[in-house]
Every structure is written in C-alpha cells, then in structure tokens.
Length: 136
Image (tube, rainbow, N blue to C red; front, side):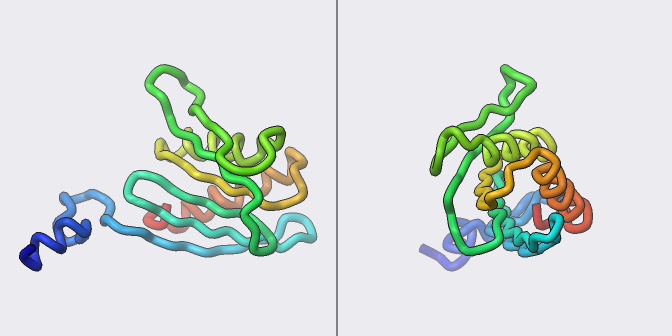
C-alpha cells in the first residue's frame, strides 16, 4: 500500500472534509468537586461517539450506551456492564446523547446516586463541553 493510501486508511485528519471533525481519538481529562468529593472525568471523543468515564478512583463498575433514534424523542439506551438495577449511567448517557446527538458511552463509578448530586455532575460535564467543544 502506498504511504498516502495508508494515511487515508488510518483516517488521517488532513483528508477530512472541510468543517468536519478530525478523525482519530481525542482525550480530555478534567475534575471538579461535588460537595466534599473530588470527581475525575475522562472524555474520549471518537469519530461519531463519545466515551465518558466519571469516578473518584480507578474502576469500571458500570457502562451504558445511548443514542438518538429517528423513531423516538428519547434516546435509546442500554446497560453494557454492571448492575442493571443501577440506571445512573443509562440516564446520564441518554441526557448527553440528546444534547450532543452522538452515540454516548458512560461509565459512572461513584457511590452517590442522589438526583441532585447527579445533576451537579451533569452540569460540570456541560460546563466542560461549552469550554472545550472540540474535545466532545
């Protein structure tokens, strides 16, 4: 394969249509305080989707995915990993999918699932999305 073909096959951003997001993976880490707890966020923007990890310590206890559907105003979602009765990752993924119109993977790994706490977490994510839209 010629070098130019290899670059195109690898999704080289220099061949992306004008105005399109560059191909590849973009990583973005940030943190914030929710009450007394320091919360870490890891966002991985892929070509047409976003993976978002939320936690206080290295763990992957849950994973959900959500995406918009042309058949319903509420994004469809499902739990991929973890306790199916804990819908926190699902709910957060749905709300972020509605906002971004992307496929969203969410791994929420905090013990606190209180609705006001989750709202604070979601608002922190939205603040970061506004400040660094290219990362999401």
